[in-house]
Length: 155
Image (tube, rainbow, N blue to C red; front, side):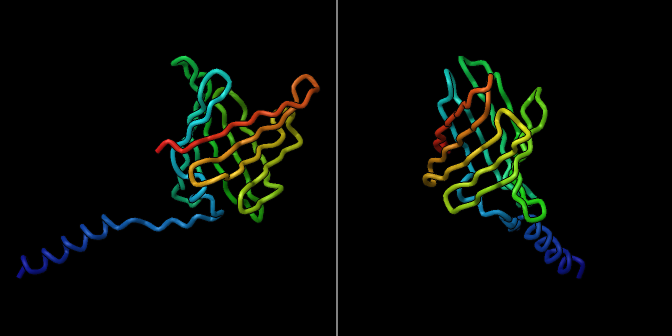
């Protein structure tokens, strides 16, 4: 009798552990950003990996590598706070930056924070399932600077 009850209990536990959770994509960016990406940047490459985290927000780990030397590392998250879509960026050895979405369209999202000089704007343009462009605008020495990074999916 104990064996008859033990088998269904074990089967239930195994099936429960193997179920994949359906995490809700709150902003609809998973299909556009999820995966590993590479972009040429200056004399090196930017590497990023975007995932949909357990809370349903897009989260990124990124680094810049030049001649086998990693000189930049960052963690970024895009999430909704109230009715606003917010970009949180934490660059290693730097203060966190917070940007608010000022434009959300099917193929692009623009974030701004005019309290910052550089950058004050970050734009993501979703060109295809395999390509996206990030454009960063800021002020350096009272001059407008624009950096454009064209990412291609690497996985």
